[in-house]
Image (cartoon, rainbow, N blue to C red):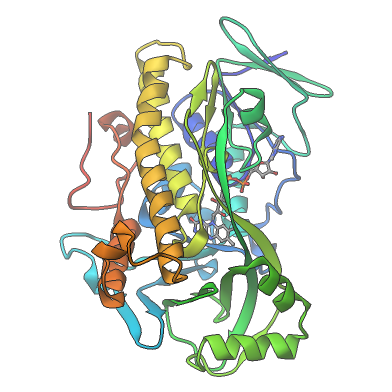
Length: 417
Ligand SMILES: Cc1cc2nc3c(=O)[nH]c(=O)nc-3n(C[C@H](O)[C@H](O)[C@H](O)COP(=O)(O)OP(=O)(O)OC[C@H]3O[C@@H](n4cnc5c(N)ncnc54)[C@H](O)[C@@H]3O)c2cc1C
């Protein structure tokens, strides 16, 4: 039996960042991942179409983990401008000048391929000394009074706390008996890389249509990653088209703004859901990232919310450790739940509302419609919210800062006790 402080099931973006951050804070962490490790030679990772737009809180976490310096700057595209369009005339655009001048930030965030970020995190987990098991699944969880055990085919791990970071369909969450409220948008998010003849430099662009939003996210090699969220039937139709037909559809929705478009890899579709749990922990099991919440990707916030979960959970577990308490201490897990549930739920509600409003599904009698009377008002609110998300830092304790966590804002995000 292998003993550790914390066992994390799931080594995706959230599990791998949590494992690394906790190990860096002096805890012994074991990470169990069902898939194989990503290619660890970061120069040899093939270009991928799945990207995330990572905000500054996430970048701060990547720096604390030691993953950010491992990533080739050529694979992280800073974006300084954002344009959001809707209907025939609705349009807002803003750039990094909108960021408070007291801040040291000079971009709105970075577009990074998921696999590149994950490879950086898995490498930093190894450097920090996390015990990582890939191609491994857990068969059974046994909770005792003073510990919790994970049973695998050829090994057992005993820990004080198990973190479910095994994604939206979390097996660990089900085993812990935690319910999740789930609503399907009946849409797929179509993802692919494209090349265009008239790129908008360092600009993340999004157009809302009645069918759903289309985003073009700039990649460092000059290509764009598209995220096209659309009804399942239309998505299947788009996926069944010839490349030329699909490119013509894309040209129509982008209204020629990017010139001619060329599809450079295969379209992939991801089902889109809104999902939230009521309880973030039960006994010695706590949830983090998509295992606790999933949102519509229209504002690129899913993983960013998960990174903020990681920062808060790290902070609470560090406080429990430093005061000599059990790592499954209810008070600290409750504080984590309180801090993160509000943000995750509000963001989910906002995404659902924006999705419905832009799709024109809300009736004029709806209170939300009443407060957002014009498209211009709506887009202006979206703009303020997007800027806040890009630059917002998760407040952290002086103890975490003393361990080297740099709050990524130089103005209002000072320490918290
Ligand atoms: C189309 C699309 C675009 C998106 N764009 C953005 C964006 O721009 N910005 C953003 O912030 N977010 C974005 N998101 C959301 C983001 O991708 C997710 O929130 C994020 O990947 C969740 O990470 P996770 O580690 O919690 O879960 P996952 O990525 O699902 O990772 C879970 C891991 O657990 C492993 N696992 C599963 N079951 C087991 C098991 N039983 N045992 C061991 N391991 C297991 C899996 O192999 C996987 O590696 C987007 C989502 C979609 C669908």
